[in-house]
Image (cartoon, rainbow, N blue to C red; front, side, top):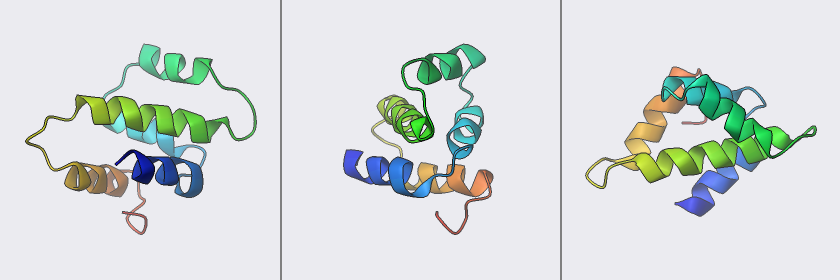
Length: 83
């Protein structure tokens, strides 16, 4: 799953998408600032996205369908074509 999330964050998410996902998953402003803290630069959104996805993945219960949850999140941020 980590490979899928890496490809999603580095190849397919747009610069603002990771923050939209963070808000959809109810990350706090403090969480978002913490994710942004480590990396800076033009392509830092890719690292931010991956970090967000890994934190989210860690919080998913074992009885939940990860792909369904990810699909729903992508649809919610208007990335249905990617979902």
